[in-house]
Length: 251
Ligand SMILES: NC(=O)c1ccc[n+]([C@@H]2O[C@H](COP(=O)([O-])OP(=O)(O)OC[C@H]3O[C@@H](n4cnc5c(N)ncnc54)[C@H](OP(=O)(O)O)[C@@H]3O)[C@@H](O)[C@H]2O)c1
Image (cartoon, rainbow, N blue to C red; front, side):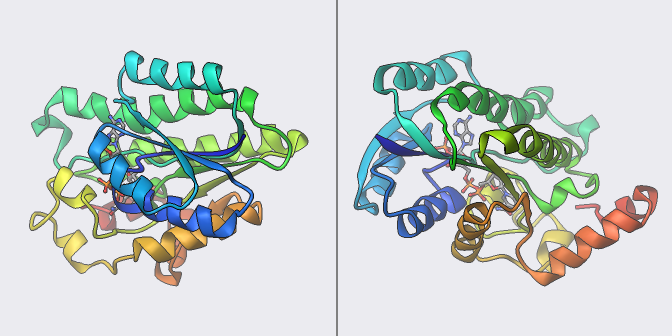
């Protein structure tokens, strides 16, 4: 069955990505929605008109990833679209932060995304697409979100490398690099009211980001940065030394 797999589908950008994918790809028959909160996945499923399979799983754990692997082995889907979107950040200096939380970001943003990709690839054929949710934080280290920005630098770098590896197989890989969005991300990260940078930066609309991302994936683009303001930031971070840009990137 032609399938789209979406992690982080219980909230924010993940919901919008599911809706945008449904609109863009009428041939996809089933949406696999993955996150920890089952009741929230039900709500997302209720907004889709195609078939769904809900996998309530904590992707930071071996058990969570095993749940997904078993579903793949059981259903043997034809995965046309894999969206690795689950992720979270934590605001604060490394020295003042709980080491478990820091490691948790690595587990979800890096480890789960990598394992999800590796175990799904055998079920993907020519014309299939992978989308990884990265961030503008991937363009330069962001002090006070140092671990988070480092995980997203991995996501962007992983995307570039994988896109090249999979080109001969006709599978595209796209990283979306949004700026701040008003989602649960802000409260999960402890950002709300605690970051001048987040108070000043222009916000991205998750629906527009999702639609742009799905279009970019369909067009086979490797990096998609919504909003001219952030494309300019990406350019600045590319041409100026990071020792300079890192001062502006402080969250
Ligand atoms: N909002 C922003 O400012 C912003 C900017 C740039 C990039 N991003 C990135 O955009 C992506 C989506 O974030 P969002 O803004 O939509 O935030 P969100 O509303 O908090 O959504 C995060 C999603 O990830 C899932 N998730 C988190 N930890 C998980 C785990 N251990 N296992 C399984 N699922 C997990 C959450 O589901 P459950 O809680 O139900 O598990 C939720 O569906 C993230 O990768 C984030 O880093 C966000």
